[in-house]
Length: 333
Image (cartoon, rainbow, N blue to C red):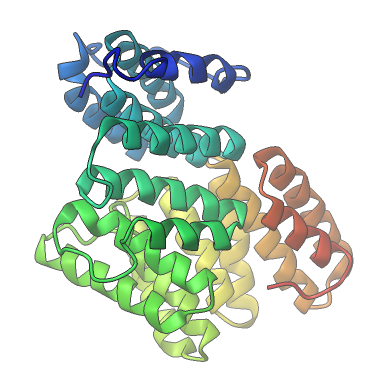
């Protein structure tokens, strides 16, 4: 949809947002893709950028998203702008630039509403999924819950693949909101649907480790260990370092004693070599919590200091609060 003169000022909305978002850009590199020839070519281009991001080529993906925003803005396409901002939000979140990610996610939602696109359809589901993921990293569970309800996507979801990401993020939201039964139902459903599509791999959706986090909280440690061990094995065979690091981080929370500590330490080593700064910050704080529990306070404080600094750089109030509480020797969920 093209924004017309019947909606004064909206044609420039995308261009009005862009300068503020780009004030402190992440490291960039040339995009190894043919640029979009116009707004009609954006779906092809954004799909290719998504593949770059999924390969952790985040600097190139971020540059490409900014180019896509420029193309959609010149055309006055609210729908094109919405999807380009949404994708850039996803990339910024993976880079650990949560303030940028939140700003782009908000812009995307506003533009999607302007475009007249169905909020509960596939495009609306994708935009909401990415917005909720940012809010989860920020720790704003109440706002995420309210947005899910307002979109009418808090009940039954279609089994179509376009809604799988929303089901996964919704499962994590249910868990964060202390609704573990609903969280597990969504996460296991993700596994079921991925198996039907023959694409059940953590690089697509890491539902196993997410479900393991829920199970260990419910006291089902043996089931949690099986799930996360399978995810670690899969990512070791065929997966990105960031996916392996995430799985190892969860394994550190699930396995008791020295085995859990070893997994947590390996997670940090692996994640240091990736662009996933928020995932690394979370791994550091998780490791600090394990060291606290093992009464290794001097080492815990060193690790937690690093985790706190990185959490502050990423802009996550929730992770900052958790790191500070643990640094002070207090338990924190």
